[in-house]
Image: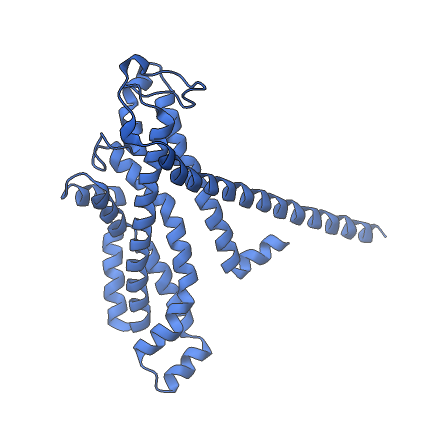
Length: 296
């Protein structure tokens, strides 16, 4: 009898833990979705209402604390900080999305080719990937950006050329797994060429993983762009960028004005966490083992 009661209590606790995990996951999903929707709405709606070029320098209103007129306060030359943060987020999202897509295309092509060809080609490609991986991303990105004038597209090229390595490894591992499937063996036995097998059978199987890698790369690309702009190697200082806003606010922070640094920093952290949260849900959906663990 005592053992039955113990087993029953364990089952109840197990069910309660499962419900708690599911409810926590639901809250995380909704919070991430709401934040991402708010970010998209802000970068679309705010520029349609107000134009950054129309913000005149007003030294009489410089470094005003947050108020009803200026919810995020003003910067060191009197411009509304909320509007500049939104425009900076717009630039950072542009860089992050375009660079993530470009890096995913490169990584998917390299990884799929290495996994599908195999043999010496696979070994050569992966040694090249290991060589690039041995160099820190930021250091390599600084070298690439230094070859061009400051601007959006040099940063995009820098992020794309330094972030395709992980995608290549993921896609290669997935291709090697798919090559052992019975339907692939049947296609090869039927006389299908390597190109046909790769395009018709292997590539569709790796697209979910490649898409997940692209989404997870967007926050990383935003941080990379912000770091380069903070170092003065990304966008020009006169353009609104989250990295440049934080960089120009350092003097204000030392003078005791916290808002020019806090709000651009939050605009970097919150959207990246929201995107990463939605990407985590995607990972759980395409990973059956992880999904079954969450159902417990």
